[in-house]
Image (cartoon, rainbow, N blue to C red):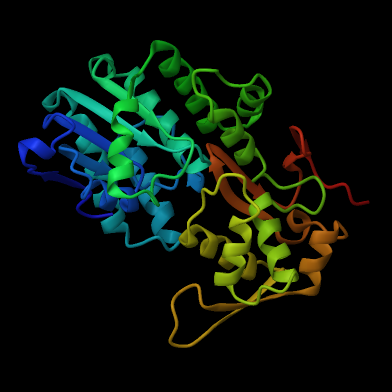
Length: 339
């Protein structure tokens, strides 16, 4: 997450965006495409994986960065020092908003980006000067695979951020970072806000990460075990299969690997992992255990056997007893459907 902020000097004829624009991009892949797009200005790549680990309501603070860096480092995303430096670089780029004539947020329709969107809108709610200079590009498809020319073609679609969007995004952020999920579930039930058309589906997908009332697995965990059960013998193969199970892909391979390791290190692991020597990090043989099949069939409960120690936004899930469960339509506090 180092060197996230850079400036590009472009010939005047190639500069489509004003040189005093700050582009806030949704990750390093898009930053690389942006660098060849001919768009001028400065850019910062936002890379924090907000759908994993604890997230505080306050944005842009030292304590928020500390919490995120400690979690991400422990989960294997990098060294604490590098992660902390990257998070600081992101926050400092926005803190210098007054150096720019405008700020343009480039985002997609999936869960990763929609959480970034409400984070940025919550930040704008506390910085009205920045809000008056801000515009949004929220694509209904993925930005990373675009050519530089295709990315540049989206520039005219940038729309000024509205008060309604800031209000809706801030309320969603407060619900996401609350210490219980009822507010988030209520926001999903009410359809969130029409001014943020992709947010409803993204937040509903987040709720599916809570342990299921049947078997105690979250959706990503269940999809991973299902892929292995269906014959995908490596994590690399299972990762591709799981992407095919998503309407809007949001998870990178680092997060997928982190979930796999969590399952494989459980007291009663549903997954066995065997690294393949001399290969990349996803070249890992994966095998479903008998208890893993029982979890998939709803014949055993993951929470009851293994307990929980994980965060979803501001909610901490812990212990072996009753916890927040996803029923398929809402969140309830329950133990297990098993007798």
